[in-house]
Image (tube, rainbow, N blue to C red):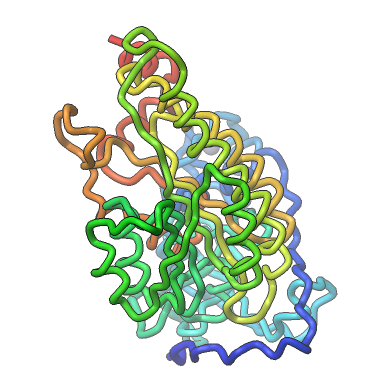
Length: 414
Ligand SMILES: [Zn+2]
C-alpha cells in the first residue's frame, strides 16, 4: 500500500533549487490525438471503422486491414498485467533524477498490449488493472496502470504525483475571495489538504459577506490584491511569489450586455481590465517564480488555473462583451500554457456554463452551483488535466462546438 504523503519539512534556503527537467516530449502528429483526449481527462484509442480493431500505438492505417478510417474512441482501459520491471538506470535526465521507476506491460481487454508506468499499489504478478492516459510533465499523454480498485492513499503514489497537481500540502493563491465561487474554492481546497491558501481581496478596507467564515479556516490567509492595479500585483508577487505552488485566478468582472444595449465602453473596459489584463499582470509577475520552482521537491510549484467561461468558445450575445473578454483571456491562457510547459507547470483552463450568481439571475436553469465548480477545479488538479467543462450546459456546448462550431454560433445568436 502507498504510504500517506508526509507533510513536507520547511525548505532549507541554502540548498539549491532543482532545475526543472522534462520527460521526452516528441510525438507524431497522429499521436497527439492521445494527448488531446488526455487533456480532457479521457483515455481514447483509435478504432478502425471497417474492422473494429483497436489500435496502439496511434497510427495512420489499421494494423489489421490497412484502412485509414480510424476514429478516436473512449476506452475503459481494463486489462491484464503481463509483466513488470523496475528501472534502476536511465540515460534520460528526467527519469535518472526519479529512479527507481516501475513499468509494466498490460494486455487491454480491447485488444492491444501496451507498456505503461505502474502505480506502486499494483503487486507484481498477474493482476487486473486499469490503464489510464495522463499528461506527464512535458504535457504529453502517457499511459499509467492503476489498481483495479481504489486503494488507500492512491493519489500519493510518487510516480502518479509526477502527472498530477494535487493540492495536498501545496500553497495556493485564490485571487478573489469575495465571490461565492471564490469562497467555495477556498473551502474545497482546505478540504483537499492545501497547506496554505492565500485569498485575494480587492477592497481590504471593506468587510464582505462570508469573509469571517473562510478566514476561520486554518490554512487561510487574506491579503490585498487588485488585479486592475499593477502595483498591487507586483506587491503580491514580492510577498508570496517565491512560495506559491498553485495559482487559481478566479477574479472576474461580469456585466450583462451586448453591443446595442449600452452606450460607451466603460463596462467592456472594466471586463477587459480584470478578465484579460488582470490575467496578463498576474502572469507577468507570478509566472517566472512558478517556473523556477517547478521541480522543487515533493510539493513543487505545479499548476495555474484560469476561470474562463464556455462563452469563450462562441459568443453569447446577451453577455456579448463579457464573452469577448473571456475569449481574449482564453487566447492569452494558451500563450501562458506554452510558456509554462518547458518548466512542467500545468495550465488548467476551466470553462463553466452559467454560474448560479447575481449576473445570471435572468437565465433559466440549469446553472452551475459554486460548490460544484469548486469541486471540478480540485478534481482537475488531482487528475492533472488541461481543460475542464464543468456542468451539463458546458458539456453540451463543448459537444456541439466540437461537432459544428458554426452551428453553435447560430444557435446562440437566435
Ligand atoms: Zn481495420
